[in-house]
Image 1: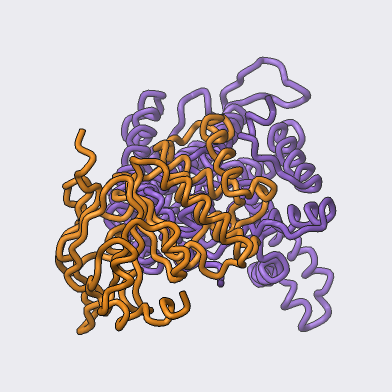
Image 2: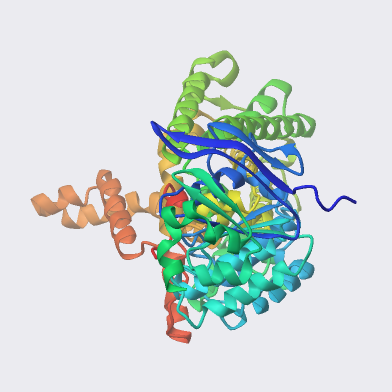
Length: 256
Length: 378
């Protein structure tokens, strides 16, 4: 077993919107058991980079590799089945289904049970059981019958994370998981991500603005600026580099 | 046990439960409850349309697909049985061949249309189905050597199903059980079985995925569900059930023509039945199909007698004339959509839920077409 092979790589990954290059030749590899924070100013291309990896956008040039296999031409659903799991920045749920039904959809996607037409989903006790565990884990058990669209914002963010956990991906992609959450809800989310991080087989990518969150979780930071990768390394090193200070981090570092 | 038959999907409203039981009872005993041909005709038509509308709701209400080709699949079923019976003679083998061929053609065509066109936006898909259905209608009217053209096909059904056939020598409850009644019960039980099968499909893991696609196809794709494949499968199931409904109608009428199966008037009827009953709930199909079929069958007669009452008054007599029944049906439709946007079933369920909990209830309706953009605002 070779643990040092990257589970996910991007090679010269590029997307152009008209004349604007939103992500510009980003080459980067992610190893199992690591948590990488992706930082950069607004409009730097962080979410676009995520969309290229998980397949919501099609690359103009370059490649996305999962365990060395090219997935650049695959649709989002096929990439998810190859182990890339994605949570979204803007909450992106099934608004008229209950919390439990939302989670169950992710659980049954993981179990590839979606094409059984004649079993009742209530008979899939195995799936119901897993969904119940995840419900507890994100502390939404008391709201399992609530319609997702009627949840308060913080709970919708938790459900968003629950859907990602339920997929049991090899690569977890969190896009600002704590955005818009109240201060007392943030530790809860960090705890969940911390738990995932302890699993040596999992790779976590995290887009995050809050530098204290980044420092407490990340073993590595990459910095995007104008679509280009401008810095890559351990947090202390990256935060100390001149180019990063200039591009983005100045203010947060002064505060620290 | 009862819960399993209903796939755990209960009516969730006492009024609705009562209405459904009443419909079930009347349809189950229609041959013994009424005399004369018309009530049994209406009952058989209701059975056929419940299956047809329920299969359409699988597309429109559950998956959020707008298709105008549903009557095409209905017609494929009808013509499949009709052509087989008229060419090969009134045998069960001919009928079986017709059924198998119709279901195979309907399923294949639905799969092809789905795989080729369900990638495009909902509005374009609707246009494509409209084009295909129109082409099919023209084809059916032009290939008169094969389909009977505008005149359609008259044929003889197997002996067991003919009016002259007697199942029992003695009348049962004062009714002679002839081939028509046997045919009625075949229609009734197959429609019932088809409906319960669809109820199971919408409550299966597959059914959940369809609703997820309706709610947010972008996220369904991100969870690993290939949306085009699921939509195409839903179209196939829906098309096969519609073809089955067409076969039942062909057996009942002993006639199949463009006006009984393929016409756009029927497509609009089906749409109205889904919307009036309530999208995204199969019980809505039962309520919608029953109400509309009864209205269409009896409104002209009621209007006729009302027209006689108002004969002396100049303007009123015009309004109430039997020819104006469509106008009144239109007004009924507008009123019901205005007052019950979630359909009758949606309204009844919301009413009961408010009564019990007084809390915010599930919005059972969703507008097809905007399914990809449904995002809660942050």
